[in-house]
Image (cartoon, rainbow, N blue to C red; front, side, top):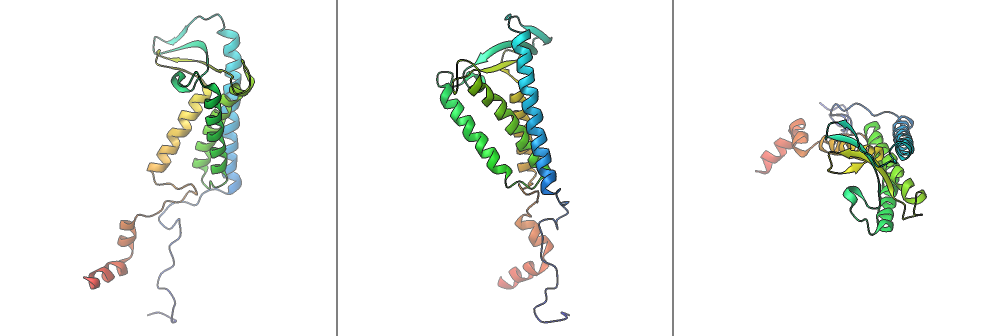
Length: 205
């Protein structure tokens, strides 16, 4: 029996009542985000400096047979050299993507989302640096690529960060983990947890 009129029999559902552990603090989330972005950017630029000095003779250096090797190229386009004749447009698109990542970081409340967005940001900034500061000039700069994947395409560390961040992001989406770290319950789950709802539906029938 209710102790007083209007008092709920059960506590209202909160984002973490379904067993999802509470996410870390905002500072902890941003720590993952910043560290991932800085490490990815630093590794990308350092590896490009090395590649420009060690691979400038044009020779291919095998690492794992014909599957993985090192070969220096200067890419004027996007992935798979798409858009090579419109480098400035690729740069503007990359700027837009980077701004979208920065905007998303203002709303993130999950350390895993912070890690994913940090990898994406670091990779995007790594390639954007090339677009703005490498020859032939701002907005037209060529990206330094040197990791040859069996002749299919040539990439760099920034691309690894982008692919890794995108893969983690897809996993988070399919795992039903929201940007704030919560796991929204499906309607079926809510019905199973709330017998009053089933009784109401039966009475309606």
